[in-house]
Image (cartoon, rainbow, N blue to C red; front, side):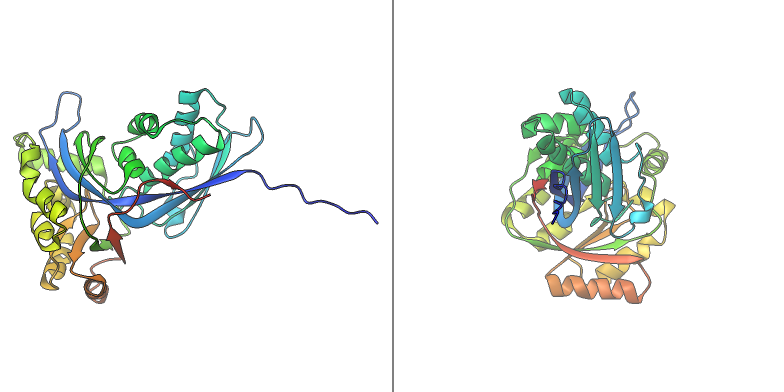
Length: 312
């Protein structure tokens, strides 16, 4: 009797990385290079992207597959940030970019919560392990910064102050757990368009950003005080986002009327983030948004969350 052995599975690595909320985002006047100086406070939330990197034959190149909520809205070619991350790491380390990537979505798409950046961060960690390139996190962060301002934070996680273009990170001290609820729109907002509207509304007179402006928020984080944190939430891009998407004002109002400790447009939008007193309170705000048709989907979660982390 002849027996047959199934081929051994190809080696693979699975990594999880978080989405984020901007607790504060202060935007300075546009510079000659076209970028705006930022001071922002990132907090990682327990909504995760998972990337599995699987070994493929030499010369096979990069492929990508995506599942999970809104997976049909994610590109499967070299415009995908995870694909670009694999290419960037291969260039940086001198290896061949041969890998099959599988992304499982857990962060809203095009919602200003850095789901694509989380994919990139997870891909860097996964491919570094799969290809045995052995880069320290500090060097991975350098590669991450070349992919986008939010990618280094997805590597770091927890809570951090971002300066420069948001990619120069300093970890921030926090205590306790915070409860968040997010109102997500199916139709995204273009980040460049939001910044253009910001420039129009400020007529080029945006004030210089100062880290000292964040003193009340930083104190609230160190104290673990959700009431003080809610009062300190801030986003300079919110007027621009609201001018492009006026219906978001109603979403903010419903959250505040529902007792949210604070509510703000997250990043460049269109997601609205509301800080709740508890998990039950977050669920109540979510139910109100749903009943009033103020969001296409709602997501409840906690923060802060860990950065990109190996699962297997």
